[in-house]
Image (cartoon, rainbow, N blue to C red; front, side):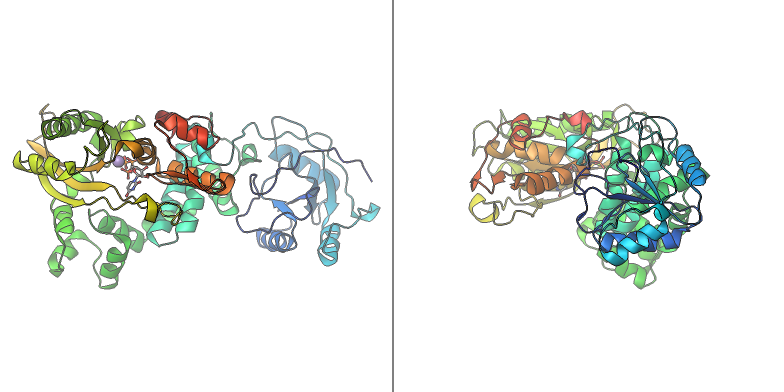
Length: 486
Ligand code: UTP
Ligand code: MN
């Protein structure tokens, strides 16, 4: 028995378990890695799942966490040279190199059996490991706009979008989390071995990443892009006012394109009619100068109906994005209560000025007493809100033949007491928000929404008048908007 170097084993909830659905690690001193070479991918998958069910931790990638390397029909030299080439670069690791017989005996026993002479190939002397590290929640990381791994994140984002369009939200989030980890890396990934030890990279995401790194593209992504169903869902949900359910119904009825939709004579609601009418414009990115023009119009309208009210541009533009799919604004007033009734006045002013092609206002329906802790998982906002389509004059005249374009604009009104929560909740990115709520719930036993933060342990609301205070309540380092682009 060769002495095993002591190592820290990260609890599986926070670390890379390599698979989303394994049991908690029953044997923290044992971290398995199964060598695919000569074993084959399907047998490796099968054995990995078996080990997971028995409570063993199995790593998808070789990393310094691995304590036991399992191989089949390989010599010790073969395994050593494979691992050295796979993990070329940095760091030092030692682990047992074992024949699959140790694995099968352990599975049969339901625990790691003692390592005997006949199980052993040989021990690795030094193998280099991952240069990258990242905490597992996106809200613990800084993610700027610069992305060094766009080929990988584009592939994963497309698969996330496809999963969401199929209604498979869990799978969609898994791909989004994987993409977010890669977005936060300071350098391009050149070899999958560099990813060992990073969180949120499940087996499926890793296969896609390896495919892109080795072949320049992912076969699964290509097939998805070519799929008629994906194309039709994208076109139809690209219509403002059309969700996945509606698009699916139309596809079942044989409608796959805008032309087929128009020719079908389907009843469309008001939002959908506006969406179809301005389809081209609304699928054209909004530029920062255009967003600034919208801001000036909104600020003028707000100031004229409630002097002293404050308008803040939120969403992607607040994070410093150069373009967006819409422009989002949060409106408040320093004196609580003065904001009541503001939205209809702003809307009717904008309407009378001819700036609105479409608008729908929903009333504020949030009541702390009813909606707070009793509904911790609800992330639906209940602010007074206006979904609109602006007719935006092309001031610079740079846009071509049209004197104006249609732009999606969201207006949200918040009382000052909830302003910090609304600001944090509406600045995004969507994944960053989701991760903040997951962190609050899982790590802090708190419920975070765009209205409030509730501490379950203390059974009380935690007040905040700035985003910094909310991060502090959550025990997180403050991340500025420009670094929330997860
Ligand atoms: P957007 O969908 O506008 O995204 O939501 P974005 O980040 O500005 O990116 P673009 O517009 O595609 O460029 C902005 C933020 O508002 C929150 C989301 O969580 C997101 O972070 N939001 C949006 C809500 O809280 N509720 C909603 O109903 C919609
Ligand atoms: Mn937006």
